[in-house]
Length: 258
Image (tube, rainbow, N blue to C red):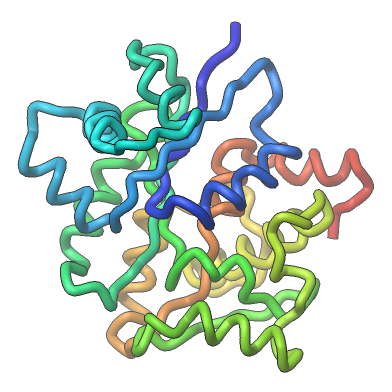
């Protein structure tokens, strides 16, 4: 029996475009149907919406926002048309840390991570640190631990693009529309190693998926007081949560494992 995997994004362009590529290789087994909804605001705005109307659940909040749009995309309408919440097997939320925003609040983010902690119940919230462009923040195939200042994050996207232009970051990760399974394997490997080093001080690929709440607490303990964060993309962490150890079996079966 087919089931719906629902992705909920902060943005309307970048995250859906990354997912369009990702869905060429993942989440399409066993008749899964992947649907995408862009909330259009940051995680702190979603926190406010949920607290202002506690009679609504996450899906209802998203549908309410989609229905406000004069021009709905086919994807918007497909999400609205789900109606029966039981048809959704997994919900994943993808938002940025965005600590530079005027409504940013670490306590609110911690509350959201505590609430949205299971993809098959309320949903699982994944955070990109410092923001979605972290998926491009990679020097090559080999593991390197990267931290980035949380000051002037409005310029992070431009900074990443400039680092790619000058050769400090690898240009193969710039255009996510061209990612193939090898690219996803390299990004997954580096980001999972970064997450495990953040959590456990070990450069070993984790067996168990890193939990988003634990990642935030580690960032809060080790990095945020120094006005920096470990650079982490949410997409590889979601893939590891969805597939577990079978994620790397998938790469192995294609002869791609690093």
